[in-house]
Length: 451
Image 1 (cartoon, one colour):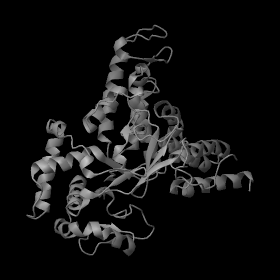
Image 2 (cartoon, one colour):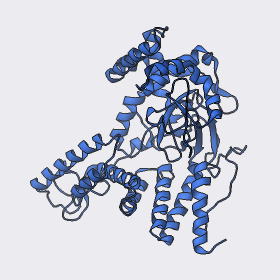
Image 3 (cartoon, helix red, strand yellow):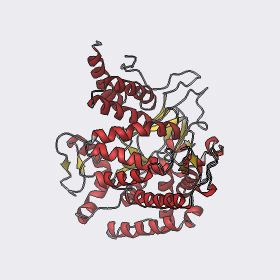
């Protein structure tokens, strides 16, 4: 098999050209928090899940650690919140409130002089981060959120002095705009953190770099060869790219207060494929508002249009309701309604298909998951860049599902594709590659009788 299984250094080679798959930046967080959803399942310090039971902090009985080693390392940060968390149990502190508390204490303890390096000599400091005060003041949704957090922390601080509301707004704005979602190797969000050095990196809907994590350490790797390392040219994606230009621009404007004008946002989209129905006559994508297929010129009936709009509304409603918890049975109903109605690349159809795939895996319904995953591949390659971690992970999951079905040849094909992507996005030395890819490569070689 032509799959690489060796380790190689990931740090950048000191030469002018920066090869594809080069680690150009690594950084520990300035401040971070584990999301409360996982507080009893993952270590509050390293975000790892241990086979044995986690140890609860004897003081607050709120946070959990792998062992005494992690508890000792985490104490420098946790000690300031421990006595307060003890008083609120069994209530749970909102994640953003805990992040702000830790941020306030970090800055009180000299964090304002902290230098977040990017490259050997360049660095940023807390004061270099933009608060977006003017935009925040006009953002009703975030102002209400900020005010509620201020009330929560006023109670949490038990009468201790909080920053005044103007200073608090500056902290809140910087947190909102500069936080990274800390993910595991499968890109599941575990918490959030502020990485001051990495905050220099701008967004593009056609990124040339990607952010991944080993524990809480942020790693930036290149997705293409660069002529030289220029930090103004390094671009990552702040958002999920499986969306239309209008949707991406709205999300970026709402969350980060800028209108994206990257090359991808300037391209003409095939809206008939992204939002269209499937023509009953020739199965091409057709926009409902045009009422006629541009390919075969067949007109759409009023009944077909009404059914399309009804199914789309039904799908939108369930997508909104499944943001936190997905239900495979609901997905099945949606997909059944989509058949011969929504075009195969319709964004809402793909979202439901994606949700159904992950839900089926969670329920160990591997036959159904394989069916959904094979339908997803074409859509992932359509909406994500050629090299993207989500695409690599999808190929990896398909490999496992196919090997489970004893379809070795097809499984190996997806494993090769996964390896070719993930060695760039995550690196040969990553825990994902070492713990997931390498054992699968060895298993497949054994199946083929290759030593």
